[in-house]
Amino acid sequence: MPIKKNSGRQDLLVAFVDVSFADLAAGANAAIDVPHGAVVVGGDVVVKTPFNSATSAAAKVGDKGDDDRYATVDLKVAGRTALTITGHKHNVAEHVLVGFAQVGAGATAGAFRLTLHYYVEGRAAFSQG
Image (tube, rainbow, N blue to C red; front, side, top):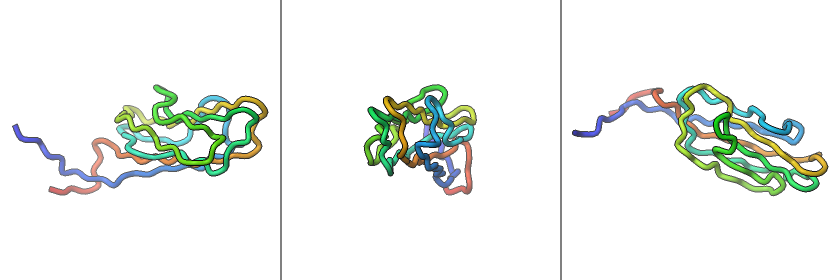
């Protein structure tokens, strides 16, 4: 039996959010909303200004079902952390969450950008083939 081709095409969707130390509360923080059917296929966390927490500062990027589905990031170190791509399909519209924890005196400086690349299963902007 031949493969049944899918002629539907869509652009890759990109969402990002800039986050500073003052935006974060301990625990889960809603960062980016994704629609029903979204499949994350790329993205990263770029620490632009390292957090100056006394001992440690860390973020987990995930969702309600798995708080670190996409990444765990040391916020005290400048640099880029690529998201781990799992193939997970979001079966409901939901938030991508940034879990935040720090030890010692709280940060008074720090910033990062979270970027998601995703497509929405079942959506088509145009057809080809």
